[in-house]
Length: 541
Image 1 (cartoon, rainbow, N blue to C red):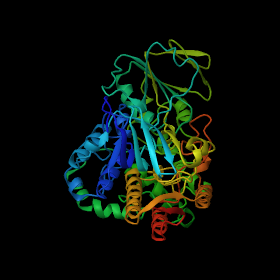
Image 2 (image 1 turned 135 degrees about the vertical axis):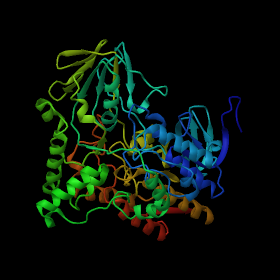
Image 3 (image 1 turned 90 degrees about the vertical axis):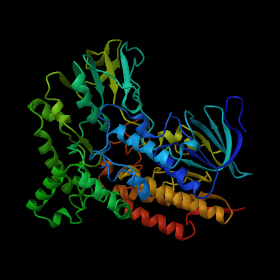
C-alpha cells in the first residue's frame, strides 16, 4: 500500500536492503534469484554508493579496473570495456549503471530515500523499517549494504559556519563539478582523496594551500590506458581469477605475494623485490615479503625504501622532511596511490602548512587561522575522510531484541560475529561489516564474499522454514577476541588510522577490519555454514 505521496506504508517484504552501491546491487540480483520480495532503499538519486558521492577531481579507484568489477557473470563482464588501468569515478559510475540496466535492477530500488530507523518485533520476528520519505515497511530480513566509506566526516573546527567563501567535502562533491580557475583554495587533509585531488585542483587554482597533519606513504599508481590485448586477456581470466582471488590475502590475483620472510632473503634480494614492485605501481609493493606488516625490522626496510623513492620527487629540501611520513609503518595506514602528488608541491603557487607545527585554530570569515596566521581563501576543500565502517550503519536508529539499540551496544566499539551479524539483532546482516576483511582487501571480492554467504544463508533458512538467525554472544566474543589477537600480531595498531577510528574525535580506538586475510576468512565462512551455521542461534518457525 502507498499513501498520497507515493511512499510505502504497511508493505510486507521479505528483505529490505539499505544502499545501492556495489553491495546492494549484487544483493538485489542474488535475492531475486531466490524469488524473494526485495526492496532496496538508496539515499542518492542513482546507483553507485561511494562512487555516486565521491566525484572530487581526480577521484579514482586504487584497485586495478580489471579486478574492480563483478566476477559473478561472464555475460555482464563481456559487455563492458574498461579504458584505464585504474578507473576514474565517472567510468566506475557508468559501469555500475550499465550493470543495473543490464540486470534491470532499478525497478526495485527506491532512490532519494534514507532509511532512518529499524525496529525488531520479537512476537512476529519481523523488522519495521522507516525512511525519510515516510515509508513504513515490514520485512523478515534487513541487510545493511551501506558501505565502509560512505559517511563523510566534517571536522568540528570553531567558526565552521563563518567562512564567506565556498566549502566542499571530497566525499559529498557537487555533481556539476567545481571550477577553481583563478581562485585561492585551501585543502585540509592529506589522505587518499587529497592525494588524488590536490594535483587536479592545483592545475586550476591561482593559489593552493594544503594543511597537513600527518604525511602519508604514497606510491605512484602507474596509471595508463589499457591495451586491447590486456582487455581481451582480462575477459578470459576474470571468472577464474575471481576464484583465485578468494584464496589470496587481499582478494587480488593480478600480482603474486612473496611468501618468503625478509629474514630468509639477502639485502640484494629484498632491494630487487621492492624496486620491481614499486616500479610496477599499485598495492603489489605490500606483497614484497611475508613479514612486511608483521615485523618492525622487516617493515623498516620497506619504509626507508619508500621514503627514499618519495624524496626523489621533491625539489625543496625543506619540504622533504615535512612530506615524508614518519612514526608509522608503511602499509599500516591505507596506502595512497598517486599521480604526480608530491611533484605538485614543486609548483610555486602551492604551499604546505604543517599543522603539527602550526595547528588549525579556527575557520574565519576569510579562511583558515593556523598558528596565529590567517590564510585567506575563496574556497576550502575538506579532504577529511569518513566515519569509516560504522558511521553509515549507526546513522540508522536500529533497535533489536528487548529494546536494545545498536548505537548503545557499539558505543565502546563495534562487536560482530564474522562481521556479518551482532548478537541481539536477529535477521540483521551487514555486508563487509567490522570484523571482516573488507577495507584490507579488494572491496569487490569482499562484497561478493559476503553477499554470496548471506544469500545462501537466507535461502537455506527459507527452505527449512527457520524463523530467525542471530549471532550468539559467546561466538561474537570469541570472534572479537580473535580479530584483536590477529591485529596484535601485525603492525596495523601502530598507526593512528581510520582502521582504528582515529580520525574521528571521541570514536573508540578499536581495530575494525579482520587482518587475517580473505583466504583464511573464506575458510572460516565455509566452515561455519557447513556446520549448520555454527555460532548462530537458529529459531524454528
